[in-house]
Length: 304
Image (cartoon, rainbow, N blue to C red; front, side):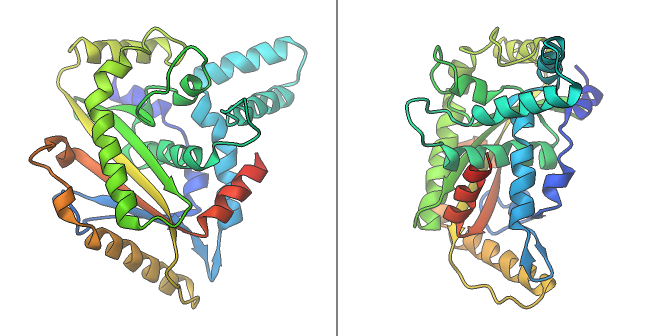
């Protein structure tokens, strides 16, 4: 697989990101020698594009669950049963949304965590141009496998270097303090990093990767990807309660940008122990405040 092959496989998610405002810059956080990300639901004039954001996010579920080859295979089977192309696509979309009902013993959707994982999937592709190596939702819904530690494993080739990206998503609709949420996310991503090889070994030669990407996973575990680097991504989606003065689009965006900058700045940097965990030199943080996140999650669930 070459770099051009990776770029061909990237999901085209521009429609979703028309409704997400992304700020990539140096923030007052460790490591401070690289860019991190702040993001929020975009505004048009004085209106938050919440409905548009949710519609695009729901439409993207099928991309998260099925790779392009798997989608094509399922569509071919549906057409062979006598469906039209449009009806076949509808069937696959319905099956994808049903996979969100991960707890089959309950009517409740595990929507809070899955919303964050879906965002993580898109941010890694949109901002880091890395394709999913593993289809985590297939593992979650498999009765024969324990839950995989990482919320995302992506892969890319950049300047001749193989880069494995392990990601974690933390979503807090309740009244967590941001610093506690961010610290929890740090602990989680370090644990994911420490367990990455052991857990990845459980999933090669399964239906979670296509053949070409299965070879990438094998080569990584056998130390045959050279040169290779591991990078980390952590997204914290949280309920923001600060007041925003609804004036005009530019001013609103500036206010939210300041909220994100303050969140980064006020985190206790002594809790980011790069000496003990040098892999943190390669982490990218994504901070995603949502005003009334509980409402967002409930509306997302109702649209499935």
